[in-house]
Length: 342
Ligand code: ATP
Ligand code: MG
Image (cartoon, rainbow, N blue to C red):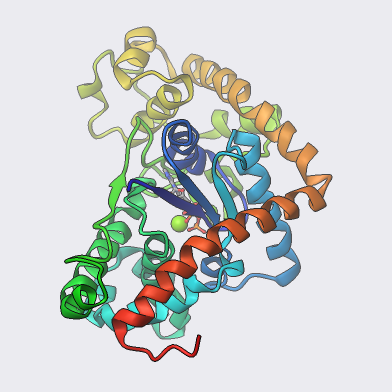
């Protein structure tokens, strides 16, 4: 059975990259597929989060999901910490995954920085918990940005090794010849890797200390205009062909953002704006960004004024998620060989 799973960390400022790289797809997918969208609060604490801030951020990410168009009647929306099977399955996967696999993860290297000895053990094991998030529902499709490709591939490796290591037990327990699916990453659209507005070689990120590096979903029109105006570019006008964007990461980034915001392609954008100076193109970009983001920001503010309503959606979503995850985890206990007390 096909099932979509994805999530965002409540680590602070949701930005245009999160929206264009992931959320915009999620909204499309819920129209035709069964979808589960998670606020991954246990992932968030792999780096320090002030508890009061974390609570607010969990509600804010939920508000963003709803404001962007996720429908809690269609999709399951919940926060990870409320379904304990994620942590439980992650432990089993910690014993399936190999240290060498984790050592190859580029996100850990980037986030841990130079002082690797001082990074949390959770940050290192992050991909194992992410595999558990996905496989607790035996999800087949995971819509994410380009930066998460490696983690989804690791999820497939974990599923495959689990299926192999426990093949005899899986069959003996009546689950045929494979228990976990090999999940497909869905990395689609013109903006699967939105870059920082300050540095065309770094991805736009919630945790970038410079607020000018990103457009937040809650930025007002003036702030968006200021950030786009200050965005790094080169001195040449825009090319008229996509080939002309090679070696011009900042120009490529702005064109991709424009295409994603307007539901077109880079070719379309260059057909219209090729030959323009950045000053003119940036003004057009501000217009489309404000048109798309202002209603989302407004709706987020409205929703945040009623945290009780947001919490009720999370309670309902976690109740529904737990039913599925509990079935998976019961099966995993049998497969692994844990004696069940109930
Ligand atoms: P953090 O810096 O805390 O890791 P983040 O901005 O990377 O925050 P995540 O919560 O880790 O956000 O990722 C949520 C989703 O957004 C994932 O699907 C991820 O691939 C996607 N995403 C994150 N940054 C970008 C980006 N710059 N471009 C496209 N997609 C992105
Ligand atoms: Mg991230």
